[in-house]
Length: 252
Ligand code: NAD
Picture 1 (tube, helix red, strand yellow):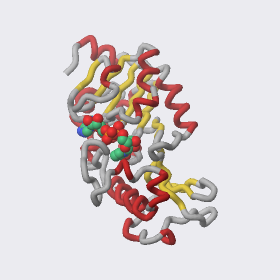
Picture 2 (spheres, protein in one colour):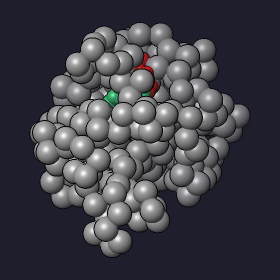
Picture 3 (cartoon, helix red, strand yellow):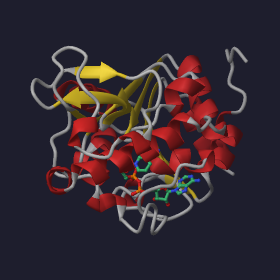
Picture 4 (cartoon, helix red, strand yellow):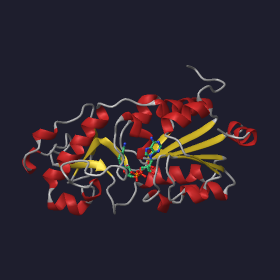
């Protein structure tokens, strides 16, 4: 798959930054936004993840998020998540920056992770921004009116999903941590993102500016391909285990 020179560059990396998008979870059965059409009741997901959509039809938005929450909660990490977890345990310095709102990286065992779009298993109250971590998925069919929205355990006010919607600011602390690490890594691996939104975050440019080797894994060309030193045009669950199947120091 790779030349000896490229492989040596990858294997000698000490600070490994992985940047993932929806494609890394595709083989767990979770559809990406831009690959699949007509995901849910003829609504485009992009039209359901904005504050305007929530103000217009909060019941629809809540039900869609709970549909996705149940799908993610019932899915299992795939071989790509597992290979990245091995890379985490084998790398002296490592950070996975994920745009994903599922928790499959964490369930596969990745510990050093920052979730820049937050987490589908969290709710946030509309009154005071209290965040609550859920331990189980909520029933989509339980939401029939605004009276049924999940309530904040701290103040009792109604909640929204605690995910970053289109047009919203990224949370500051995770963004800072991601930028700091991306700008000093020596290997930057982009997995399963179209880069349509994330291209604007600048992580890949920061890594490149520091001289990092940029490896992309995506069956299709993306908005970030032009920055990559190498693009592997394979599904993540095929490419990543081949690259990081056996790593010295691997506990498995
Ligand atoms: P996207 O839908 O814009 O792009 C998905 C990318 O994954 C495409 O470039 C596609 O070619 C690639 N891809 C498809 N199958 C793949 C595979 N098997 N292996 C590797 N790559 C594959 O997704 P995005 O760039 O992540 O941006 C969309 C937004 O949607 C993000 O903000 C994310 O939070 C959200 N989202 C998250 C999930 C999730 O958490 N699992 C699912 C859908 C959408």
